[in-house]
Each structure stands twice: as C-alpha cells, then as structure tokens.
Image (tube, rainbow over all chains, first blue to last red; front, side, top):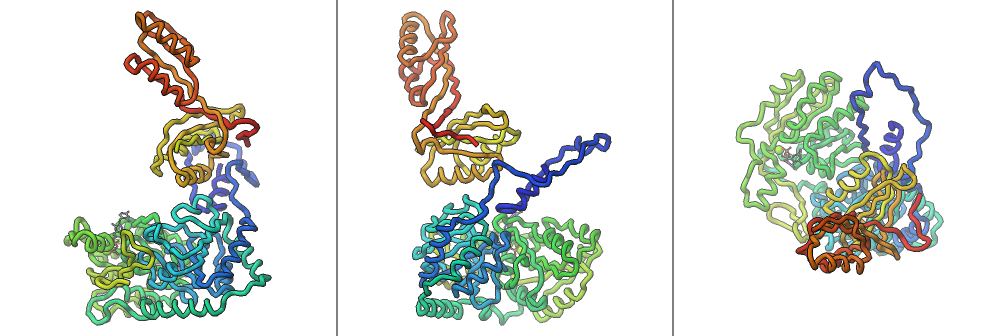
Length: 438
Length: 163
Ligand SMILES: Cc1ncc(C[n+]2csc(CCOP(=O)(O)OP(=O)(O)O)c2C)c(N)n1
Ligand SMILES: [Mg+2]
C-alpha cells in the first residue's frame, strides 16, 4: 500500500496521496510481517511515457511556421523537471515566454525573452503577446480562469499546441489544435531533437517585427521597466516592499506566499531565475499556506534564505506554527504587508461593490505582531516609515538564525494592477490603474 | 444527449464513492447507476447513464479515467450496443382490471411474479423507454410501487470491455 502510494505520488502528474492508517494497525503488541515490494504495477494506472511522435512533429512544424509564436508554460514544467528543455526550446525558436503563477521560475524571470507572468494580474505585455500570437505552445499549464479571462475571447488568432501529462487537462476550457499527452521533459526533448535537424527556416523578418512589437509594449506598460505605482508619497507602497526584498536578498531567496494582494505583488515584483524558488498554493487559494511552506523549505535547505510574503490576514491562519519554528529552529523571515485589511477582498469590494467593506476590515482588532513574536521567542520589527524600509529589511535578513517578522505598514488604499477587466473581457483588456485601461 | 458509460473498476472499498464523488464535485448528474462484481471478483462493472453534450461527456470520461480505481471504461452510446433495465412494479388489480393488466403484461413480455386478491407484482425487462411506456399502458393511477434497477449495457457483436 505504501509503495503504491509513493509510486502514484511521484509519477504521472505528481501530487500528494493520503494513506489512512487506522489506530488498531499501530497496536505495539500486534506484529505484522514486514514486506516492501521492489516494484509495483497498477493495472489501472499507466501514465503516458512518451508523447505521440506524429503530433510532436506537427507541433514543431507549426512552431517553425509561426510569425508570432508564444510559449505559455505552467507549473507542470517545474513538476516535470523540464525547465532546461523549455529554456533551450525558447532560445532555439527565439520565442517569447510567459509563465503562470505556478510556473514562475520555470523560465528565468530576468531573461530578455521572458515577458512576465500572464493572466488576471499578469503583465500587460504578456497578455498582449498571448492575444496577438498566431501559435501558442502551452506546456504544463491548464488554461485556468485566472489566465484566460473570458474563454471564448481567448487568443482569437492562435493555433494552440497543448502538452500535458494529464489528458483531462487538454481541451478542458480552450480547445487544443495539436494536443500532446506525455511527460513534458520527454516531449520537449523530442521537439528539440526534431528542431536540430529541421530544414524549414523560421520567418526571420516576422520574428523581428514580433519582438519589436513586444518590446514596445514592454516599454509602454512594463511594471518592472519603471515603477507604475506612486513613488512620491510618504506611504510605503507594497510594490516597493517586494522590490526592496528582491534587492536585499539579491533575487536569490526562496519565497513562499499566502493569498491576497501581497501574493500578487510578490509574483509581479520578484522575478525568479530558478525553478522551485516560488512556493505558492496557486489555484487552491489557501490563506495560511505561506508560513508552513516556508518552514518546509527551510527544513530542507538549512542555510538558505527563506522569506514568507504574507498579509496580516493570511499569517493569522497558521500563526501557531511560530512555535514549531522555535522547536525545529527554522529561521524563516516573515514579510507581512500589513494593509490593515483583507486587501484582495477589499479591492473587489472597491471595484464591484461600491466600496462597501463588508467584513474586510478589522476595526482595531489586529494583534501587536511585534509583541506576539516576542512572546514566541522570536524577533518582530515594525516598519511605518518609508525611509526606514531598506535598512530594517537588511537588519532582518542579517539575523541569520532568528525567526524575524517584519510588520510593514503599507498604503491600505493600494490595488493590484494590471488587472483583467471582467466579465466578458479578453486577454488584452486590462485595468492599468484605478482610472486607466488598455 | 443521453449516454451510457460502462466502467470496469477495482472491486475495493471506496472505489464507488470516488466515482460518484466525481459527479457531485463537478456538478454532473447521474440518471441511473448499477454496479456489481464481474466473473473476476477483483473487478466491478459499473454502468451509469448521464446527460450531456460531447464536450461534457469527454470531460466525464477523462476524469473517470483519471481515477486510480478505474481500470477501463467505454461510452456505449458511441457504438452499437444493447441496454436493459429490470423493473419490479406493483399495480392494483381488481375486477375487470385484472384481465386488462394481465394483457398488458403479456404485450410487454413481462411476468407476473406475485399475486394477491387485489395486487399484481410484475417483472419487466427492456430499455428504459419500454419501461416508461409500460407506465402509460397500465395507467399511472393503478401503480402502487416501482423499483427499477437502472440501466445495464453491453456492446454488440465482437466488442468487449475487459482488461
Ligand atoms: C482560508 C481562506 N479563507 C478565505 C480566503 C478568501 N480570501 C482571498 S484573499 C483574502 C484576503 C487576504 O488578506 P491578507 O492576508 O491580509 O492579504 P492582502 O490581500 O491584504 O494582501 C481572502 C479572505 C482564502 N483565499 N483562503
Ligand atoms: Mg491584508
């Protein structure tokens, strides 16, 4: 049973398996013979080992003939250990790459060919590139509603190649023109192999124009090209906190996050150059995920810098784990963007419910996080002044063996942008700030 | 469109609840469901009928296939197939009605399997449509109780669903 569980957990589309062991099995007086099989075979579980050769060939031809190619890569690329293949393929095709929230780090975030995260709070240039692409290679991604906006307006010009280990993910919301079921690493390897000896040439002129267009979009809208948030006030802006975090940790931290505005700011303003650096609950959307996830990472990577970017709402979902941090000596750093609100809920209330803040404010009920940290035997740092942000953050990360909680008071009125316009919007329809749209 | 999906699955505790759970989680409706072990006791054969367009049925079959306990499945309605349902039905049968009901049962090739002075218990097999038609023929007013097995189905000719 255990062997089966591990086999299922680690193969196909990897994921957790629950083994339910009743109490009577653990009775110390009942002895069972120990047996652990070398191999297991399940007649009802046979994940694909290779992609279909004909389909892969077709996909490569389509990619070579593209005038405006686009690679849309999700968390499956990371789970399937195919990040190197993805990078090689993107370089070979000189195609722009976007990652989903779960895929961040699958392609180097600071690379020229990376156009940013896509979707609801994705980069405008990424969403525009998707919308205008003529061929999209989707790898290990599932066309989630947080990516596509209105499905029947999704990328009207594109032929879609969809590679996934899970047949159920293919043509679920968006119909694939070239479906390929198989492990992403092997499928991308096959593609690279065909490309190595391919005689067809890409349309160089079209690609050049495509890049020119993308770079124009990037210049015009890119949030990492220059700040699009307010930089002249006294308030600490949440975006600035993440940018500072990126600089202080030299872009090399393991970052976990919870759910809300802080999560989106972290995804937008902390580019990940390596896979498995961004640990997030993604579509499950579970507030409370960030701290335990950070502890897990720290437990395995004892010397690594691990930051949990959280909100004052999310952190309170699993705050008791601070005691476990003490017990197992897990010196994680907690970066709390304290906007004194369930900010993402409040943002939607602003945008769709006439700013009626039903149950999204705390009305003076928040704990004193600094005192709370001290009670657990950790360190708390409160930051309320913009000019102190960097120095205090440096101080925080200098305390290598301490659990440190930075309670950073950020502008409570700030919204996350860009943001898809919904309902009925397409990929390219986005709010740029509270008043302007694409 | 009405579909008959036939599933071979592990005859293990929890398997059925996973199949049924998938339908409720994803908001698909099950019209009927039958399940019993096959000649190989480690396998159960489950037949369910549901209603949906091609896209929805594709989703259902893909998600069923994803369940570890599901070994193999087929959408019987995609090809030539035979379907049967068994119905036990109790009807009031007094006076002149007795002969009338009996005639009706004969026409539908059913059997009266239990009799009292006022009640017939009848067994009928056939397609679900045929069973529905029997209600009409006998008159809904005289029906006292109905038990239907749900649809069982099998492909025609050489086609078999085995492992
Ligand atoms: C366990 C759980 N409960 C509720 C939600 C719904 N939800 C999504 S974001 C959010 C607000 C989170 O507030 P906070 O952690 O302070 O983050 P902020 O958006 O303010 O940055 C809520 C309640 C959720 N995702 N998970
Ligand atoms: Mg908050």
